Image (tube, rainbow, N blue to C red; front, side, top):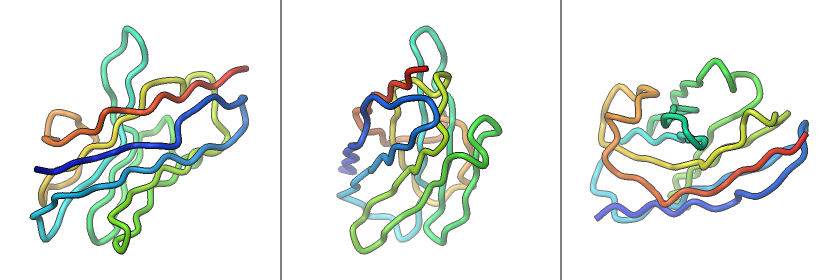
Length: 123
């Protein structure tokens, strides 16, 4: 079974930076899509960024230019580099994975999820 373990969340002031990590194990896919999603209290889970095995990325408009998704194949880890964070970025952040798909920002197409890591941005 695929296991995804997120880390790196915490509290940060507005304008600051944070890096989230997602360590993956148990993969049988030769190709995949991995993504970061977030869910604020009372809100639906939304896509933040996705990346394919060969490095194609997609970002939501709300984080484009501020967040960067990257991966380290040797460590089976995907990162979310968060810069210029805002209070609206406060949410539980989840890592997700799926086999070879088009890699959209839609949570519905992802079958494997981590437990989440909390990010809180104060003004």
